[in-house]
Each structure stands twice: as structure tokens, then as C-alpha cells.
Image (cartoon, rainbow, N blue to C red):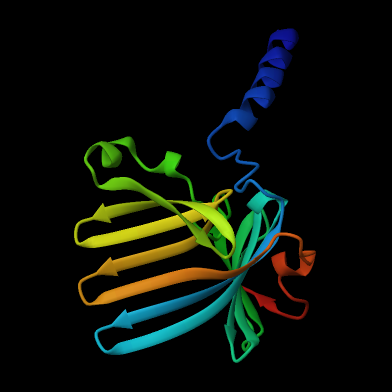
Amino acid sequence: MVRSCLAAAVLLLLLCPLSGNSQTHKYGIKSGSVTFETETVMGKIKMNEHYIVWFDDYGMKEAKETMENGAVTGSFFSDGVSLYTVKTAKRTAFKSGNASRGTEYRFDWGEVPAKDKQAGKAKQLPARTIAGKECQSYEVTSGSVVSTFAGWQGVTLFHELKRENMTVTTRAVKFDEKVAVPAAKFAVPAGFTVK
């Protein structure tokens, strides 16, 4: 009886890493930083945003830092286990749930549902160069919304969403895969309140 329970426990431990949430490599490279610019156009209104995404451990840890006038105003990060939203001015962090998918969209044509590909709602596009990287690209249509993605090694470097009267374009303008990523990017800053 003890031997059967022990064998079942060992089998369970061996099979657990094969379950759906056991992702260990989100990206094909270990670490880096990507600087993005986003332009939102709604009719005659145009808005621009600038942010930096840092990642380490093949994307299992990620941080998206929002910037204003060259200063970090907040971040949304994954420490590999949990998600946090940090409001710099308020010196507060909010725990936002499980980090099974990180903070950023993983570029992967293989994850697009086969039914969308067969129905013509999703199609591959020609490769394009973004931030010095030769990227694969695809487009997905959902109702009146058309989303275009381009990425390299799983890292999304371009995303454009088009719908009636609105276009949101996010493009990587700098990709640094040789940068030393500070561990502090994936932790709540000292002295901040966690809610």
C-alpha cells in the first residue's frame, strides 16, 4: 500500500510539469529591453505614448514601464509568479493576479486558432523589419477590428489595431538583447505599500 502511494506520488510529480501552465520559455532569448512608441488616432485626435518592456528568464519575468517626460510614472510587472501594478507617484503597488502569461502578448502564429486560419480571419503576412529584427507577421480580423502583429523570437515588436475611426499602432523603436536587466525591475520598490 505504501509502495503504491509512493509510486503514485512520484508519477504525479513527474507529470505536473507537463500541465498547461508549466511554460518555462515565453521567448526564444533570455533577456532584453524593448522601447516602444504608441500612436493612437481617433478622428482628428492624435495621442502618443512611450514605454519600455524589460524581460528576463526567457520572458518569465517582465516589466512594462510607462514614461512621461523621460521619467517612469508606473509599471506593470510579473515576477514569474504574480502580476503587480505600480503607481510611482502614490508609492503603491497592487497585486493583480497570477503571472502565467506574463505582461506582454507572446507573438506566436501557432497559437492562433486553426478555425480562424481556415475561415480566412487570420493570415500570415510578408516578413518586415522592426527595430533591426527580421520579423514574422500576421493579421487577425474579428468583426470590424483588424489586428496586425509582427514579432521575433516570440517577442511582439509591432501591433496595430484598426477599427472604424480609430487606429492604434505600437512599434518597437529600440531592441537591446545585450542589456543587463536589473532584478529590481521585477520587484515592488522598497517603501511602497502593497494592496
